[in-house]
Length: 221
Image 1 (tube, helix red, strand yellow):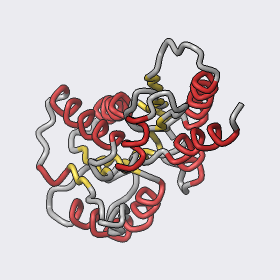
Image 2 (cartoon, rainbow, N blue to C red):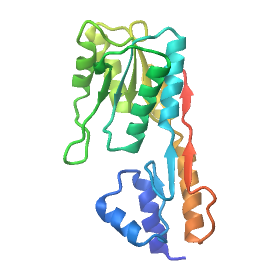
Image 3 (cartoon, one colour):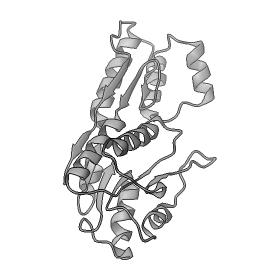
């Protein structure tokens, strides 16, 4: 086995980011190169069904009496965020929730490929007016931790005035205080599936499912 081919293939799994133009051109020119895309679309990829997780969260929130549900999500350049936006908008229509536009806040991406570090500003924009969410879905551990710290300082009790749902890894949500209800991507399961697919590609074996989808777990805390 060519160790260099293994390490380069594994590199794409480890990144889990957007594939840049140079990598995309290389993969297009070398379709037999043993690569597996992690978390983004590709000919061989392992992805998390965030749209399903968002629907589970909104179903739970509606069932527990919430009608004003907001979401702060990352840049649309990433497939996982586009899924979240589609899942949110579909569930809002399904449950016939009439929400103002500012209840869905999509972060922008800077030229250096990082999100704007303005988490407090996002929260202030959403909760600063007279009409604000009674529940909010937050993308990532850092944004959720920011909300846990600042929303009480804005006069909002958690969860009496606003319920939080975090989109992050299970251990991240568990590490917050208090531990948050969350949509948890099965990173371990995705990694196992990606490595198994990569191994089959290295060995030139048939892959029955070149695009694997895993459903996130919705855990109430």
